[in-house]
Figure 1: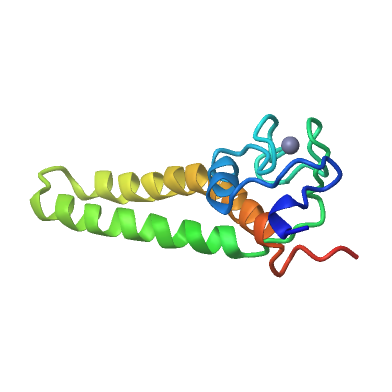
Figure 2: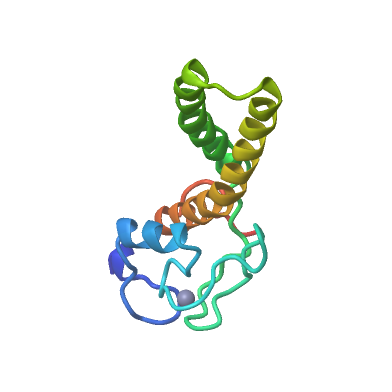
Length: 132
Ligand SMILES: [Zn+2]
């Protein structure tokens, strides 16, 4: 039996890495895609209620915050440099606008990055997927 055919308990084939990561990015169960992967803002469910796949043991650690910071920086810094070179509004607007945009963007990206890394670890059985 290959790894691709070894779905936990269900006997159905595991989805491809790309499909599992797309499902994780959308916050869905990487195995079946029918239920939510995150129980709250960042905490993953212990197990999928539809397919029974367990996720409580996965530990992506700081990968999601790392990716979030990387993405926010790469999106906002070039944008800020472009906008600030041509701006006509007062300084206080810029000092309010950019931190709020950074915060909003980070809050949007962080759970998606967590879902992405959870699905990556689950799909590849990578470090962080060990059971105690
Ligand atoms: Zn599932």
